[in-house]
Structures are given as C-alpha cells and as structure tokens.
Length: 289
Image 1 (cartoon, rainbow, N blue to C red):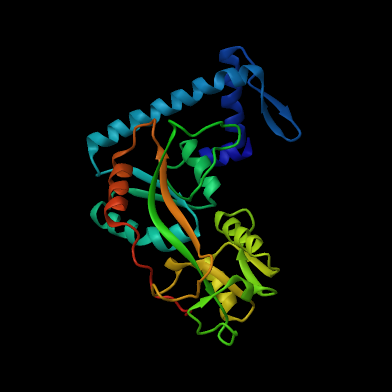
Image 2 (tube, rainbow, N blue to C red):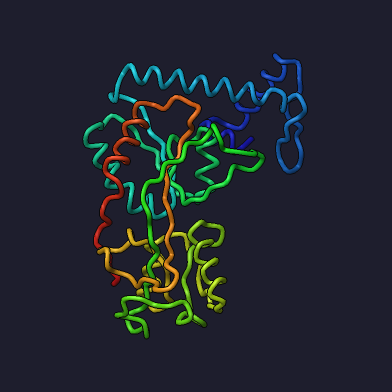
C-alpha cells in the first residue's frame, strides 16, 4: 500500500480510502491484509484482467489525444541497462529534445529483466535489453505482447590497471585470466551472466574483489589498481580501446522492446524511428585505454 501510494503521489491513507470505496461499490473484498503485505483474494484475481484492460484502454485514449496534438506535448518513458542509459541514449535524447522540447522524458536505469517486466506492465514505452529475454514471473509467453527489434551489437572489452602484465596488449586469452582479480557488475545482471558463463566455459578461477552497478565506478576502480574489469565498447573513447578476447569474444545483442498489442504514443513512435535510422551513437571520450 505504501509503495502504491508513492507511485500515485498520494498519501497511504488516501489510497486505503479509495480501495475501501472500490470494495464497497463492488461488494467484494479484493485484498487480504497480511503481515507481508496485500494479497489478492479470489474476487481480486477475477477483477484484475478487467482492471488491466481498462488501464490499457485509458493509455490508448491518451495516445490518441496526444496524436491530435502531435509532438507539441506528451511524455516518453524509456528503460535500459547502464550502457544504454549512460552512453547510448543521451546523444539520441539530446537530439530528440532539440527538435521536440515539449516532450518530457523519464529514463530508468535497471537490469534487462526489470525492463522487460516494466514494458510488459505498461510502465515503460520503450526498453533496451540484452537478448535473450524471458517473460515476467507468472507470464507463460511474450508472443503477441512484446515486439523485439535488434538494435546494435555490443562487445565487452577487458580493462586493466596501468602497470598490469596485459597493459598495452591488443588481445588476451581466457587462460591468461586464471587467478585474476576482477571488478565485475553485480550478480543477476545480463552482462554479469555473460561474463560468468565465459569464465565457466574457460574453466578458470578468478577472484571477484568487487561488484558494482555503475560502469564509471568500475572504470575508476580499474584506474586505482583494484582489479581488471569488462565494460562495453561504448563506454570507451575509441573503437580500438580495451583488450579484446582472441578465443571467445564477449559479444551481446542489444534490442529495443515495446508492447505490440497497444497503441504507441506519437513520441514513442518518433523516438523509435530515430533509433532505427541513427543506430548507436559514438561514445564520448574515455579515460582508460
């Protein structure tokens, strides 16, 4: 209830009052109050799909009205991982804002699975994810619900401290990282899963000395000599920076996702077309070679 109130920008008592009125109007108890939070009753489960349909139609109505106004008003919500929100989206958002200053942006940095969940729930217009993706918990399939468009291919490159034995090398092989101290992304992220898989495939042992969410924080830890790290090629200042893997490169496919069964807003359609036409922008100059 408290989280719902925060999302609606209301007080918790106000939300409780509205829910009580709804239950009174329907003559049904929709939630059981438990020590762990609110749980849908049988009546609540029966009402849920109708409520979701009402909200979906409301979004369609809002999109239709926005279309009448063109790009002179409206909003756009986008979610993506650290690489997308830090390096890929800002130049595109800047260009889009220059042409359409009245559009408000909401950008969320979050793991790919959270992006999938929020796009599915209608909380995000567009999402940038690492493929493959899986449905939200409790959803059997995304078929007919989520559209997936390949956007750009990314490669993770190895960064090492200044006086590291691999400093200055153009490439490395996985056996060379046996026993290496690594600064990695937090467990559970798509990038971390890719790195963990390759380490397991190489059958080497590494020392994970730190886990972080921020790419810039990871780069700074490497600069301080704490350990080596893998970051996106888009987080580097030049396409040839970073050390590439010569035997099993760390490549991933980034895609843009959106609901395929709902009407997109004018702003979402316009920004999606910009993404298609321009692709991934060049990243800003980096500080590490």
